Length: 95
Image (cartoon, rainbow, N blue to C red; front, side, top):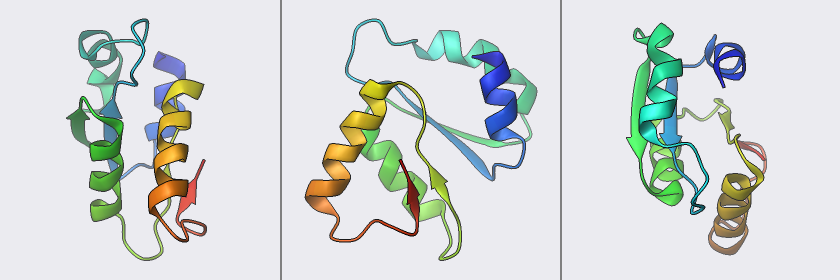
């Protein structure tokens, strides 16, 4: 988790963390241990992946990239939401 977060957050404007709907997913306490190095960043916590996604879109500018990464469970949750609720997510969303 530590190495992955260092790579992904180096140039990030914000870090938005949520937990997918699966029991074995890392909890907030675990993740917080690994993102302490980025206290200068804006970190937002959500229990719901859709709320996290919506926050990311509100923070993103027209030419910004919103990167959704993590477990396949998380990406799957958001992929389903995006494909069912968003007519055209291409260009702004990396799944």
